[in-house]
Length: 339
Image 1 (cartoon, rainbow, N blue to C red):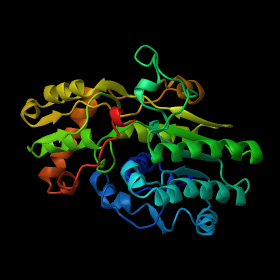
Image 2 (cartoon, one colour; image 1 turned 180 degrees about the vertical axis):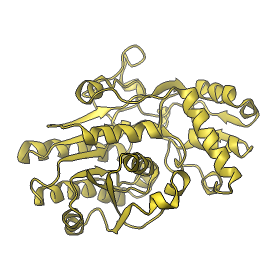
Image 3 (tube, helix red, strand yellow; image 1 turned 45 degrees about the horizontal axis):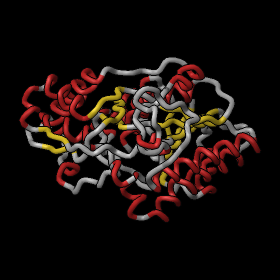
Image 4 (tube, one colour; image 1 turned 90 degrees about the vertical axis):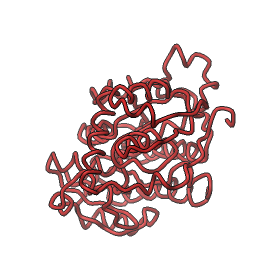
């Protein structure tokens, strides 16, 4: 496959690149600026050198179309987007990148007719409403087509993208797969409202305290599992335009912390958490994804935490572990009593 990744220098993008390289696929990253910092955490210099970079704005249809054409791209993973805190602070910018940028991807595919064989894009669990909008949530997971009640601009932008994807299939036969990650954790996750569990693990590697601002339940998904799911969806022939829930370890923050303490006992004196529930339904059913595209990887929470901690410890020993994300202000979580 000749794969183009928009927004490929983020955390999920870096791990997707790692998995694609392992499968010896050709990779081109289309992004507004080159930033190899996350790639350098998980790849060697020789591996990074195999990734082609094209500078461009995802909202620029012509530049994107030219890139797809010149690089003979056959498959696209669309990740480019701004996360909850940025969309809250600047909704117009958030809509421009998240919505117009996604429309530009579809328009570029349309312009090239049959060149692109598969499109997988990042939606989000933030399309769902607060847990109290779903009375049976604790007993019954939500299906892919459950009602959507976003509590953020970001969530509404993702709903818009999912709807537009359906229209492009309806009107032009352009197939797409939307994936809805929840709390993605692992090396390289340094931005976004739900990056705090990763920052807690990183803090343990550095032997420094960290307080997770929120509490309640969430669905923790190891970034390598998320990346493998994107790649799997890219590889399987697909017709349609559906958005799929993803599922990892659905636990509350006390359980996450207790698991971390068991992996590394010193964490018990370092890591604490709040008690307010994030305003996103946490119990999501991923049966639709597995029925349509096959079994997806689900690393047990304890194993995922241990793997992540060991990677952070190794990077720290090598002098490669930045603390910038730990020293900047934490993004304000959208919690249940604000929904």
